Amino acid sequence: MTKSELVDIVAESHGQITRKEAEFVVSEVFDAISGALTEGERVELRGFGSFTVKKREPRIGRNPKTGESVNVPAKVVPHFKPGKELRERVDAKN
Image (cartoon, rainbow, N blue to C red; front, side, top):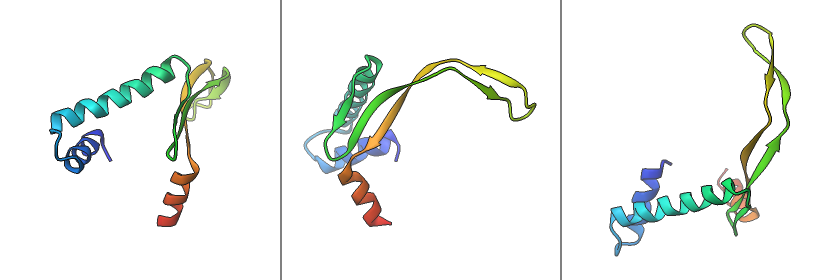
């Protein structure tokens, strides 16, 4: 599912709002989650999952083409952990 598909679903399921309003709402939610993660905060959506940031230490990687060692710097990456309800719903479908 893409962002525009999500906007369409929100607009269709709530007939009283326009597609433009739905697009604004979806963008604001994504911006709020991104902003919180940028600040190092944890975002928890009950029944869905939680977003956190994880620190990765610097390491020595390897270029698969040449086999040459490459220094990979430390970085902070977003991480999503699905909630119990989401895991159960996905598992029930498979």
